[in-house]
Length: 138
Image (cartoon, rainbow, N blue to C red; front, side, top):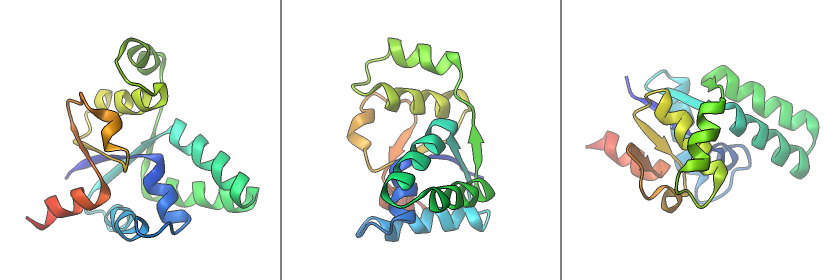
């Protein structure tokens, strides 16, 4: 079974129903829900989702969103190792580096995000939700 890392934007597209992206993101989450793929994310993604949803809506909606995510996927820890690797890597965005190294260090098959361009020198597949779904169709 494929093990995929799901980035913050994919969850936010689903939770906030951000069109046109939410259609593909919801399908990714649905695959996790039906156990067709193993979904993973990081504790940092969970913290980001809480912060953004609380700011845009309220604490209750943020907590519900996190509870829903936790019921569908596994949340991986961010350790000093990933922080150090991100510091030493050539990522323009430190946070992107942390997420990437969480995925790498947990031997995940690919990384699902809408910000593909931020992961130029990746060693694993970096795909948008739409691109990932296309790989399943072939």
